[in-house]
Image (cartoon, rainbow, N blue to C red):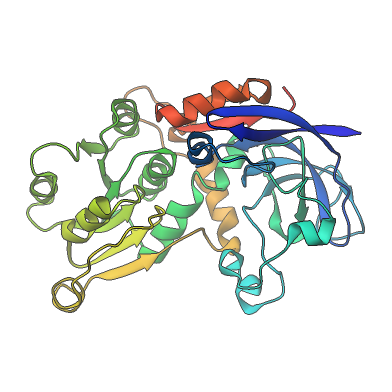
Length: 347
């Protein structure tokens, strides 16, 4: 049997290809993917990188296991991003995302097929397949990966609450997920974003939005916080300018979390930023696996937007696209005129 998977053939060229159906072995299970969110893969699409395995987020149904374990055939599950060894202290504590013992998927399975989630089937260790509650759709359950995960982990680390004003720089899919998480906690949200489509979506979600290209965004943030600054700041933009704004715009003893990937240098002044202002800086990739039920609560009990009474979680999904239209999906993702895009691998 052959499954369909997404591949990148060159600059701005995506397609579907056939691949052998993966076979589970050991503690790995075979999952039929029903929802595969798109993330930052559009960067490879624009750069012209050829790739045979794409995607790291999925929700689906267990269809085969090699041996009895933590999941069984028929289970509806969220496949957590990436892998961990499953044995080290980090994995055992739920912080598998930081595991230092790299899992070589191709060495274990003899192929890369089954590793990328933009496919009809994936292979995953059973302990990284978490149960979807009854009544939660595959599409919404898949938001428990990168749409909600990084910001949820960040707000847990910063202990954000209803008493706080939260600053979020970058209102792409991850930043919009941050608004959902912050609103769920009852926090007030100030977002910084320049793309008109995302500005409007952030406002629909209840955030006050500031254009970073407008006159003195720092001054505007301070004015909105009575001159004190935000209690917490979350950078989802992944640029030194946005990161620096987070540092400058939080109050003394404030907390800043970084989830936006950035490979450029950020200037931090140890005396002025850390010692004298007492800031706490936190790097966050994902959330602890033990918090999965809490993330599901955010999905199940999402607050409503004030204008239309629509659950905020619904606004986090802007497009659901059949994988047969993968070229269109990548073009759309690259346009930044979206929240989270969900691919349907069987359509």
